[in-house]
Amino acid sequence: MKTEKNDSNKIFSIENLLKVNPDRKPLTVEKLCELSELDLSDGDAQEIIFSIRTFCFILLEVVKEKELILKSIESITNHQQLAA
Image (cartoon, rainbow, N blue to C red; front, side, top):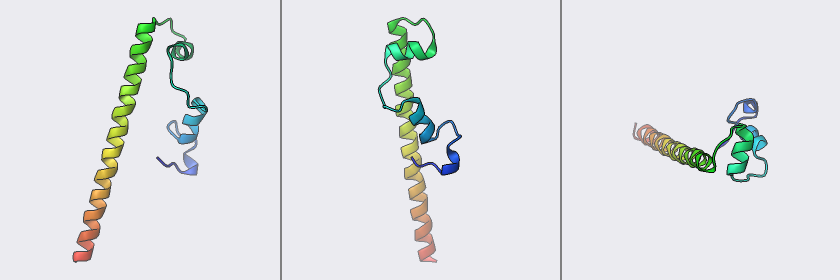
């Protein structure tokens, strides 16, 4: 996913995401409890991590599907322009 240089102040820019986790370490129960400052049981923390990972997977699939749809529309448009 590419971002423009002027997107660096957006919450979902690559630059901001890398600042949150520069070493790209997986989220652990301990890190979640530390970051959230909540007194979570290990089970609750594991459920939250599972939910986050599931949401990320679904979001990635939606983005991939959107890219395929946009490529298909572009291809159809180019085909129509060639036919005209």
